[in-house]
Image (spheres, chains in turn cyan, purple):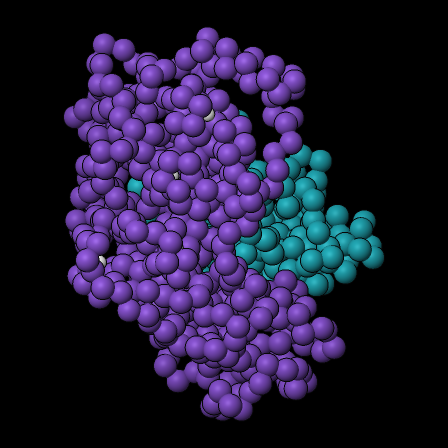
Length: 194
Length: 441
Ligand SMILES: [Zn+2]
Ligand SMILES: [Zn+2]
Ligand SMILES: [Zn+2]
Ligand SMILES: [Zn+2]
Ligand SMILES: [Zn+2]
Ligand SMILES: [Zn+2]
């Protein structure tokens, strides 16, 4: 069973200095094993201006086993699968230590956005592009940031209306938006896959 | 101490992150038994067909480490994973966290004394050889079943579960009596639920600290080194939990490091200064600490603290697990079993099991401790008596399964079919690489 009292403490601590770090972690469901982390795209990178959501799943052995993390927001990066969002990062695998936290893991992911390691790729296509044609890589990454990682300026009612117009029932739209924290792209994805 | 590892309790994580439990029928890809270590071809990395046996062994070891995660439930469940914690969450969805409801007067404890694992006040502190501190249960739970363990903070490796540092325990109780007692209630409730037990502070030789409620400071008289009879300077904590000046330990040990108080061995060279404890001493008795610093430095003719060359110290642990894996068949390794006296985990060499201790966790000692120590006691509060009888127990055979074992390869391989050489390299599946290279899109 997951050490929930520790997770509670982590959430409190992380969300206390959210103004400084820009990083937040929130429960997705009430059992605290599924969480959503948010990291701002680092300034000076093709990810700047984007807000990236990370799906967090805590295994039974947490914090003695690493949390499972993958991008819920689509991202173009050599160490992140453009398909599944899987992240290639050592601290999420064998270099995990129980002294690390969800916040420090998210900070490492943010650092990975700033400093890709194309020699140890998760997504070979992206890595090839990064190495051979950096300009195209950067513009693709920027385009993906614009398309998938920008928080919409729409108000809640406008989002609801937009999704209802696409043919989803209003009740379901509202509850789905709530679950994903108001992110219309994620809501759409969820509605489509339901 | 013995913790059950059941063959079919193993589960695996593939690089896509999905978990797979042993279905009892999977072919064992590695078979460890009493004297032989057999690797099947499938676990060899295919990228390394001509690698030296040692090199590929090293890679196989690493694959094992990352892929074979024994189900944690088979271990004693540590303090925090309990019903109490769950209830707390249910009753306090806004996230009060600490169970300080109705008790606003809990002390704010210093961050230095916050356990990096449970993120709460350290309870029953254990100091690792690198000088980092965690709770008894947090250290135990973070230890590795199959390999040497690593400090959660600095990854310094160790093979012995240290004893609780009772001096630090008394200091914490003195500094934060309310919080420390809250932790005590919490942990003992959890231990009750889990049917486990941790050492109790009852030994008359344990350091006590005067219970003067009028002051928060600990008197110098309670912080003396038993070697030099002075205030402890640059404190080091040995595997037995006793605290001394760094210089007193280095000066008194020729070869393997031994505790001047209880005579027990300290494995793997000299421990590092416990900086948190030093910080406490400096703050608690600043003048006296400064006097000690000057005195020690004058004596040694060294002016910059910390620049003194501390010798490595002798090694005393017989065989490390890593060493064993490179020389299979030479020594026995008892996975999941630890020596209750010196804390070696997993236990390497002959295992002496007490036949009269009735606790679930049992009582086991290594050969060295069996032969050299008259006063054996358990790490989990076992009621062991000197007239108890011991017997030698052989290691249990253990089967490891590969997480990426190909379906079509489900042929049973008996231990005679495979030798330890590199005969079947061509069918090797790349375990290591599979993790790093990952799927293409
Ligand atoms: Zn702890
Ligand atoms: Zn350490
Ligand atoms: Zn001394
Ligand atoms: Zn001692
Ligand atoms: Zn021993
Ligand atoms: Zn006994």
